[in-house]
Image 1: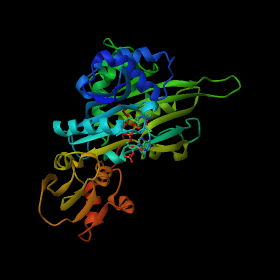
Image 2: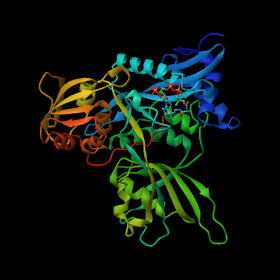
Image 3: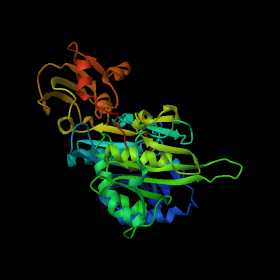
Image 4: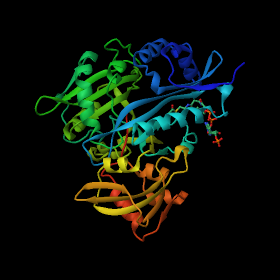
Length: 416
Ligand SMILES: CC(=O)SCCNC(=O)CCNC(=O)[C@H](O)C(C)(C)COP(=O)(O)OP(=O)(O)OC[C@H]1O[C@@H](n2cnc3c(N)ncnc32)[C@H](O)[C@@H]1OP(=O)(O)O
């Protein structure tokens, strides 16, 4: 019997046992009808050089993959190329022997070598990824909306701009509208490439996940600028219990589309409850309701985690809420230490420059704290409670928080 070894690239011929290991670790039902669908779809996008595994004799006992994706950052119309970590698992037979560390150390090194400014993930559990330099950067809220309550109808909306569309039509319209919508708020990941065909079962992909009722909103110029997908989760009962629906996607490229999509939701007959997941913590519809409590927040979770790899590239890619100069001494004691160094961030006339410097530091900051603050979702002053943030120049902490702040909370509604 040989020793287990970390393998990269992983050939597509290994896809079946590799996927089986991943599905077992993620507690997927082995008999689930979508197992073959997911296998078929993943085979079509399999990228050997961005796939890692742990092989032990003829078994695969570890999996990890990364994807080339883009992220909306604060104050910039441009998106940033990121390394997106996914499909992480180590079989329970081989856990806590350093195999995740082995795979992730290598995938981060590959990302740094490619020149990716940052790496992102959605964590299965909080304690896993901090040691590798990842930190929570956005939050995601869950809501229950009660459309039949008095005061639950958004003011001033018009549901007539919304029309039902087929999956084929969404395949055409969806990518354009979603991309416009997701560029409005920091923290949003793209749905480029295979994302839409895979989730709609188009272009040779098989439908992954549940079928949805799809709707688009047409803007003033007639072009679609909003998207909505929902499915029923409870039928009505003749005893008077109304039905319920779950919104799978609500994406609006304009404020009018946002208002009208909510107006449509509020008016669906037979529905007494609407659940929404992966929404912003500052969901604006509340301010359009006569009774803001008709929208009930049922939970908040950490969503996108960020690990900075190239501080100057990451900090110049985003915009800032205020001009100013701040020298950051970034400590990075996690895997690879890629972000360590002293950098001057100089924002003048709204244009950011960030370069290595020998000047004295205004702030000492751990890379994880800077990563949490990067998208504007967390304040360095709050993160300082856990150490890793130290003010050297009086006022520097509040100045940094002001510069990094965003008009609205960053959020992400796309899994990868
Ligand atoms: C982005 C995503 O894909 S999220 C999905 C993540 N996958 C899962 O949660 C599936 C179920 N879990 C697993 O498959 C495995 O337990 C993994 C992948 C989380 C960990 O793999 P392992 O090979 O056991 O991790 P490894 O031995 O390399 O551990 C490295 C360090 O992390 C710690 N660690 C690993 N997993 C956990 C955990 N779940 N909770 C707390 N600490 C953990 C280890 O104790 C070790 O600590 P040390 O540096 O102090 O020695």
